Image (cartoon, rainbow, N blue to C red; front, side, top):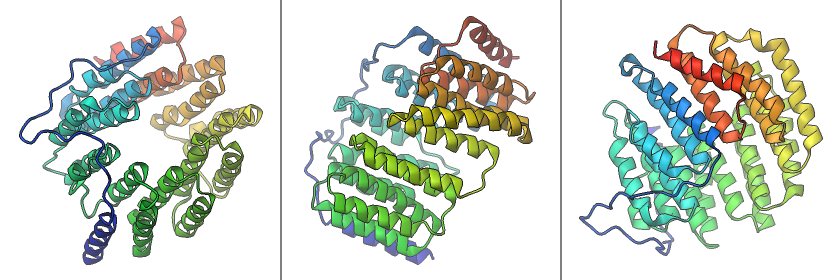
Length: 410
């Protein structure tokens, strides 16, 4: 099997190198390290959002390093990504410098991707080098490999073909799929056939990781070659054919990527049809209550985006009813995370009052377990979620959150 994987990587690499992208990003001068920026551009934002992120960071860093370094870094990364989600890259960078393990590298890579999306590429190379430097893990190299793949895709998006070479490892099929997606985003019309052939070769290997990477790759090609209806149809056909042995959750997630591509291209008619297909996938499988609530909330969000607010509300109301009936079937340390997507759903619907009420319930659910890990992870996630989704806590809820965070130090 290892020989097959090596041959596949060689084949994909040779296929991708058949074309070379025109560099659009200045190469770093050999031997000179790029200088750290003095300041990144945070956008104006409501004060309560910053306060929520601050509370989330205080919660995340209340983890003692021993034995919770992994949990702490994971929680810290949630806060960094939350800051980026509300357009606060300088704040995110300040947090990222303090992340305690290899995730510091992952956070720097995400800041680089944020800057690329904002077309602020002056300091991208600095963050990419910091990502490589801080992601090395002597115990589990796959972590470093995943960050290197993010660095590779960032460099390809900026036209740095040479800088991306050799970063994606032979067994990192998710990274290979991401590389293909980045090449599609930065490539031209002639790239399509080579990229498609590389994804098809992944599917032929018949491995779970390879097929999953290919499915996401097809969705990336769908997004970047959206103007060609024939290609879109072909990519959907290949995706449906490839996922026959894949779990329902992966099918759903990939179909959502197709929906998002249609929405990005203001094609609401196609998006509506794809949402229906995603909902059919949801209804075709049996889910535990946590996954059931999450997927219902995802569908509701997509329906909001195409203007189907009534249908979205009906689905969220049904989710609340299901939560009332079945949430107690979960262990108490899973309940807050299960209900949180429903609160987010109402926030996306524009019903701030209903969302705030549900967030208050989520906060209480997260505070029940006496163990440190669920209490920290839940209050961190809830604060970030409220900040990202624009739900200002009232005085009572804010006071409760502050009390919970303060108690974590004990």
